[in-house]
Image (tube, rainbow, N blue to C red; front, side):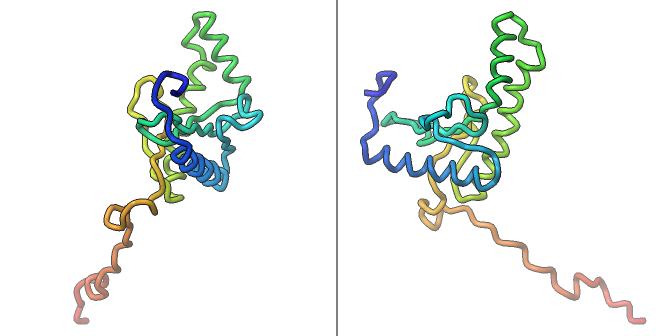
Length: 163
């Protein structure tokens, strides 16, 4: 059983999810932002992309990614919340940055061949859901991009002027 009473995924399934999480971290780091797996030593105070492996057997996504602002900014937001001042710049900043970074992280992951999408849950609106690698999909289901063919030379030049 997992922490919340759900059936825990098998060790074999968790090994595959751990490998996917490592690929997510590598893809994000290649693009520039700091990234770490949630359980890594010292990751609690780190700013950057926080990658979590879902340990439940039945889940929506194998891996989730969240943006973590600098710990001082998070503390300022917590202090504002505890003081009942939810309309402060510090409080808004943490949520807004999470949403801005969500879009960027999805684009980075998709460009790296990782299937990622928005979380549809209002409890964690800034989450990025990761389902696997595009290379894991059967060829018929893989997204493809074919650049448009150049326009016909005659049509690109326009009608002949005859002059």
